[in-house]
Image 1 (tube, rainbow, N blue to C red):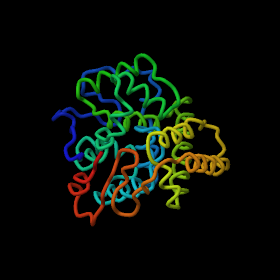
Image 2 (image 1 turned 120 degrees about the vertical axis):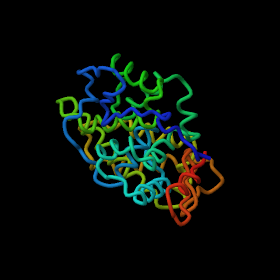
Image 3 (image 1 turned 30 degrees about the horizontal axis):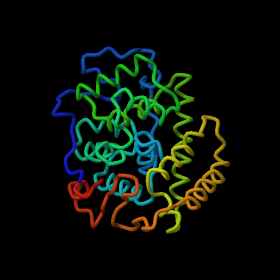
Image 4 (image 1 turned 60 degrees about the horizontal axis):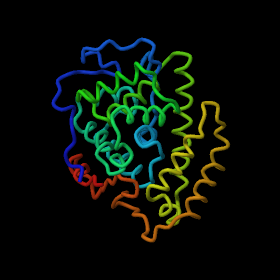
Length: 277
């Protein structure tokens, strides 16, 4: 169960956006993903949740996980602008619990068994298709290792910073992230049969979906996404060895490590209490 999460280790430090000015560090000015110049909002909870799945796990959300997390964010009336949401994390324990649940999942433990450097590098690859530069890597590793940031918050902040970077390279990064979220959304919405839901289950299926997203470039043509999604789902179904049907409806989505049971949501505590694996 993911009933308790690390909420910044009780730190009183404030870190709006991804600058984290209060931790006593000087942010390298050239780190392209960290210059927040303007707000680039994600327009709905679908985009927010897909962005969290993509940044932390490198794959699209499963159907039930998407529905449940959208409902959880709506229940607490979370901001739909990614910059406002990232800033709200610092003071809103409900948002903290939802975001940090990604880092407490079984999938997280399986993916990120290495050191913090490996984790940060993987997040950069998930979000930006590249490794971090040396100073950026050192900055994020230090913030995580000192408990200023949880891993989940760091992954969210890296994505949020990239979405608001107004440099020339940053604008290209924004296009890449937008295309990844678009493809992820197309993939999840295309899972509309029990066979497809069942096939998007387990480590091999998750790896296939990651490989699909890794093909996206900033100049990718969205009109090609449907054929890519169809081919990926066909591959998953053809290679599916799962005998148990994937859970659907209002119970849980534990096929990839996060399960959110929404059995008549009353408050966030009830949601987080049902996060498992």
